[in-house]
Length: 549
Ligand code: G6Q
Image 1 (cartoon, rainbow, N blue to C red):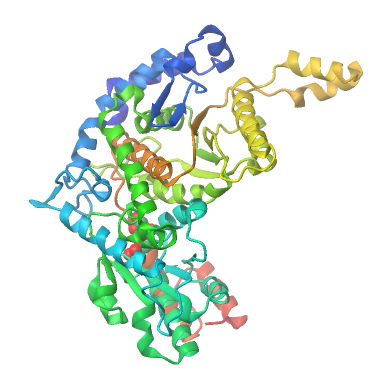
Image 2 (spheres, rainbow, N blue to C red; image 1 turned 180 degrees about the vertical axis):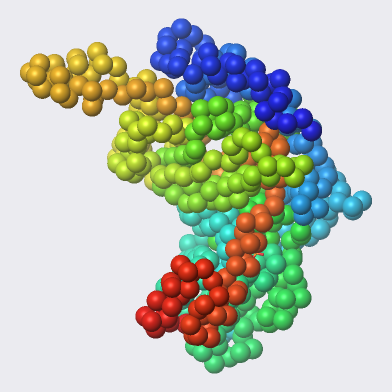
């Protein structure tokens, strides 16, 4: 594969960057009344307006050329058809099959995997409907009112963002909680509010060996037995979502209470699999399936729309433009919707675990920047916090702004105010405020020339800050599914352009190994001498503080 930075399509962008880097978007809007028409795309009711970006016709053409040249469409087709594109784990990448609502065959090693996907979906439906309908109750006959998901990383963040975002669709009287951190406080604080006889624990772990999850699961089981004095009842209150049935059985989970998924589903892409069980329990299977439908619609759009109107590809290529040509180190996501408050945490894993890589697919170190730092907050909160840096800081921060046109909770004119803030911010970030505009404002306020001279530089806004506006009708399960799939595919496209494997996570695996040795040493409570001077002294100081187990 030709090196990215040696490609003619890359070099063309480098040359073009020199011409456009100082051009202001304000001028581009003035000179071209067709920007919105040219630089927007739509999938169902999801509108992407990318006209407030530092691009002109030529930039956009060159970015699309780069996508073509790096084989985005070919690799996309390889992913959908089950080729082993995860080259360091020798696996296909088939989260798209999990939401393949058209049910067309998808083959792994000659086997059509759709029947087993459908079987697990049917199992989730049967189980979740029995729990929600009160047919499957706790050991004492009590209704199940609380679901506690115990899992971490991909076995937590996906179902967590969905359950949080879809609260208005939850069944009345049903609560869902997520325990992920090995910090005992996480589990303890949740157990304070649930009753064992009314609680269903879902142990979510692909490997069923992740230390945090297994420790939390054991502690939850101990708590359950302590309070109920009924060890047999564990089987009724604990279910597992895993691809390691043997380990789940050893934990005491009944075979009928195991929900399977497969090694071709990556952790951070697994919310569409049985990892979505808490979603089905909390929102109902119909809503879970609506979410799958929305994601499937985005999959079809990603497969079929031309590059220029293909939302995930356009978002990805704009990200490449800022990451690699403007040296933007981060990308922010601002959802103007309180239900989406966990979206940045979810996207951080999706993006940074997928594209936080230095080695390319040929095993060589890359000589260009790969995945950005992802961060964000809900609007309008963010405006009162870090937006100062976006408006007047020295660092370029491209950002996505998301908002539904309709609120689930209309209250006076509050949603209209939220919308106004949303429109005002992206406009201000694009336009800025010129010296003349700032001066006119100060003069209008009646300030003396002396004051104006001192204050004026602080009141100028350079503008030219790029944003993508993503606007849709409602935040419902279908739209949420489409939006999450949109980001999955954006990350995928960038991984293809950067020629990295977006589907392994050796850094996470490394973290799983690292603590084991130190934990042995800590538990022995003997003086640490085997590490570097810093670590030895930190451990010994901690020991002097009589740390808790
Ligand atoms: C995701 C990662 C990682 C994983 C967790 C939990 O892509 O692989 O976040 O999901 O480490 O792993 P288990 O599900 O195996 O417990």
